[in-house]
Image (cartoon, rainbow, N blue to C red):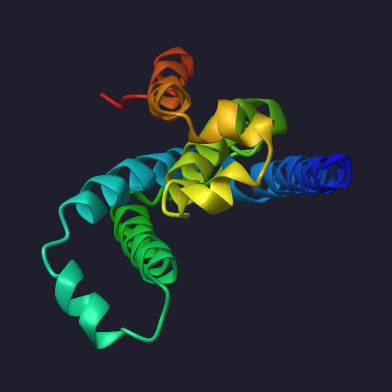
Length: 169
């Protein structure tokens, strides 16, 4: 049993390291405006995914594929479509250095990544989640954790300083 726990802990550490690396990479490449679009797209995609009325037909069409893959695939497709649509609508005419500053983007990126992880992990069967380790179970997959990962990015947006446009008279 100790060997299984050690392997589980090693995977957990690798997941955490990958998450930190991904957050830094996304923070540096997206900028604040796109990160906000990504965050809002996650909320919209989660809402649409929960109300997708053709799930039974999709499952029947892809019956040889595991349900979790269909569920995750559907969420990712909806997320990408929403992100592209919102990004196109709200695209800024120019991006400033302040907009892409690591310190301006990092907090939102971390919270968005955790929120997105909690959504995606919720599609995985309970027996697989149980084997991921106590950190993931406590801080990502529990219902209380998923609630806070959904709320905290919104709270962070309240404290985000947005650049004011200069009005020309």
